[in-house]
Amino acid sequence: MDVVVPIAIVLSIFLALNIGANNSAASMATAYGAGARSKKEAITLIAVFALLGSFLAGAPVIKTLGKGLVPESVLSSHLGLVLIILIIAIFFISWANIVRVPVATTHAIVCAIAGVGLYSSALNGRKFFEIVTWWVVTPFAAWFLNYLIGRYLYFRTLRFLTSRYSEEGIRSILGFLITISGCYVAFSAGANNAANSVGPLVGIGLISPSLGAILAGLGMGVGAILLGGRVLDTVGKEITEICILRAVSVEFTGATLILVASVFGIPVSLAEIITSGIIGFSCASQGFSVTAQNKHVLRIAFFWFVVPFFAVAISYGLSSLYFKYGILAMLGANF
Image (cartoon, rainbow, N blue to C red):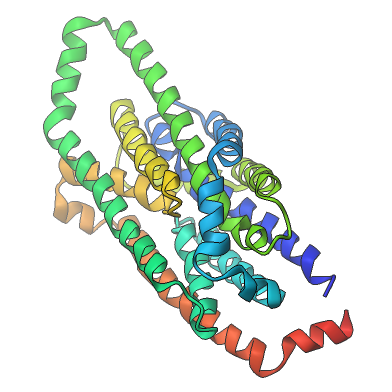
């Protein structure tokens, strides 16, 4: 079984790369779409602050994914189940990166764990439904808050700024705010999403929470640098035009929701929350019908609804095969 451990660690790091490309990249899409940062600047900030968020504030969510959904005894007794969880998550997130959609990374990993838990009759149903409730509430809150801001406060804020500051002064103020908000959301992303790649490994004691947070943060940063530009284009350029003031709103509201969830140890979707905020502004400026017909919005919504169901089903099915055909014994005999 010794070979299973390094394979699991490699898969975990690869998953962190994909999370950095898909989920963390979305954290800077608003500022990139607004033209406030270049693609290079955006992904560099993601790399730095995702690592900081993971290392300083990632422990509560890592603990939830490591031990809160399925008892650690289940995974520690069957390391092959960890491989199943990681492979399923990697499959869906890599698929999303290829088609340039900000998929909900958290949905893939949590539902993969849930599938294992269902088959082994060890799923903490109360915690799972608590997490699902947050999945519904947080993107709706991001959409609603930004819809209200776009509808009732956006132009008032513009008038306030233009009546009191010069064009250069406004540019300086917004530039400062967008830098702060971007770093804030990248930090929140690291705090919450680090657990997606290392939670199962930490839960069974393969690595410590501190080492897991560092590995996940580094992986997310490298993934954002190498692969994040593709998702930046989709979210930042192809849903609606985003000015700097709108970007600040989306980032601050989104980062706050994510950080609150992290404090409670709840894994939520960064991509879903940030994208919902952008859609909220789109509804306020372009109307509900126009936004609903946007092909990118429809494709994103499809991934959000499909991934959880498929992740649970595939995880359940692979767990069944794992025990039915004695894969654990086969691994032990050969390695």
